[in-house]
Length: 169
Image 1 (tube, one colour):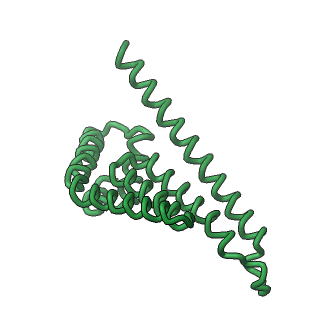
Image 2 (cartoon, rainbow, N blue to C red):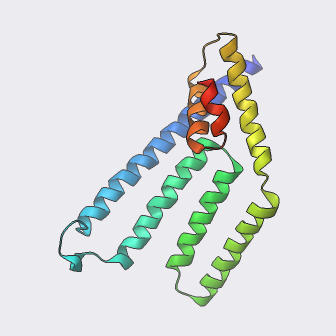
């Protein structure tokens, strides 16, 4: 009974992650269209293009896209990338000395985490274990679940294990 309930919770959680990701993606698309039309980016009248007003809006969209990747990939690297983009966005938009100092310290901290604490080999080992489980099911001719197929696609697109993922399609 516990495994059935755990499985249901995990599947429901995955569905909610997809719904949240699609919702954010739609919001990013609508916002992009709004920015392009509001600032009349494609006109030949360059007086309508105001980069200082557009930049924060574009940076918000980038952070939103990176957030989607973080939700879908479930990796330490994706989390660090989101934090890096969000911190860089704040650093670019903040015009105070304290904000710049804090932003530079935060970025330096994130680089230090990336360099000294983030173990890419550990993450790749985790992805390899996922691929092995998928391959074992495939060899036993057990149909892959939608989540397993989606995981395989995400691993392939992330490029984390490019050599391994293509063999297990």
